[in-house]
Image (cartoon, rainbow, N blue to C red):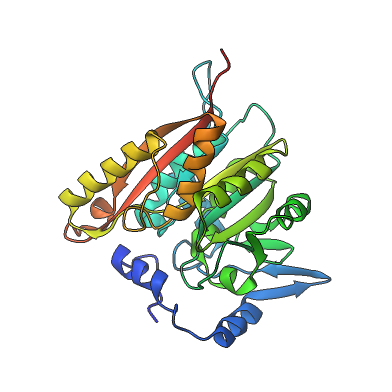
Length: 308
């Protein structure tokens, strides 16, 4: 298995994302045991890709995030207050600035952000529906983030929700977003969900339940196209961005690896009157120097439609 480090190419990182689907369930269970640790009576999900997708040293990570996330600015009358974001999940060298631009939107929210639902595709474990991790906290080099027990109880009432620790054990699509949230928000509670096969309506129902609790925000984790030449990728990713801005779904996995959760957000956006905004659109070519096979990244914010 390729173990990507900070200087790995986006192609190496993407290959790391997809290997392991054929591994037996008992190996995944072993990974689960190795990746989770018990602290007192609490089970904590340990970082799986610290030191590869992002720095494992807390000071180095804080310095990296300071460069990726812009300084605090006054929102002013025209600044929006989104309830959902789409952010990429590649190594910070490649997609970190795009992610930073997305997460800046959560700074100084009008209402206090108490919890964040982070939802991303399952890269290594096949599953039906959406999966909770069955733990009490997620740990990053910046500290532990408690799981929101109230929202977990609500989610377990939905038939499309299960508990699958193995699906979370090595999954990076949620983990890489967490240091950004810790930097912007400080303390908050987390609801992490990995998604397998699910309909847009199933995902949208989960989001609506989450938003029923005040102070809830959603982050959908997804990159865009993979392995296309730079010029072609720009065309494809621009078309995908236009569809997102039009709340036009379903997207396909070749357009966005997180197509399933994005489709759920777009479905919820149609019924809930959300207004998408494009914040950033680029690919890995500038960071990697490789223009033959690139990975696309986009940042989007979803605002509530103002009442007339």
